[in-house]
Image 1 (cartoon, helix red, strand yellow):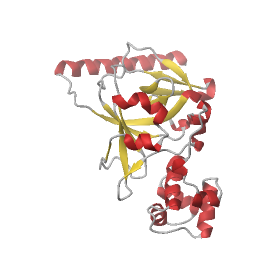
Image 2 (spheres, helix red, strand yellow):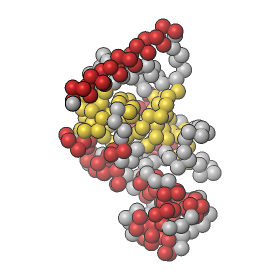
Image 3 (tube, helix red, strand yellow):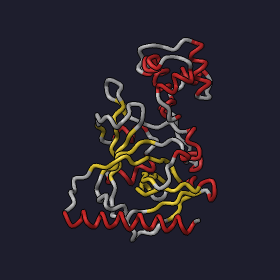
Length: 262
């Protein structure tokens, strides 16, 4: 993959758009974007100018700077999701330039908050491919192994299949997400976006024994939307009944909260 194609791919994924969406913005065919990213073709000058404009960078940077090697600022606010436009997401690709899914096991979770933007750290993580039709080739996915019972019935040790969310404003209220912070590391919670009102996210557990808590948006380094989970711990019949009861109780709690707000 040549440098131009590599930069286009990284910047596109950092912006959170597909090849089709970038092609539409640039006024060209999607197949051309694929050719550029795979190093099979080089954009002509008018196309380079358009793509550089879309990414809000100059042409010289696009063709000569390796964005994958950019160092991240030590300033927490610069690295936070408030400024994701300055972030280049580190990923791993196969020999045929197909993006692989990195796995963050419990043992690596402690170091992830420090190494999440370091290409060498990401490359040190286990990787694999998951050829499922539910996963788009144009998105970035990662597996995070969780620990604890705060999100039961999802068991401790489960691997959460996640999609990268480049913009915190795309959070769906009350849906489960992996939140990465410098202070707490990796947490798996249901997220409520209170940024416009208080500058915070409200995090809630599915297990009612755990109280909700808030975290400032400028402390959040990455947001990953939970799509599903993989677990090697199968529930017993009694556990299934308790899970159903738990879902009912949590559903009633949310309805009461909504009524109280009104």
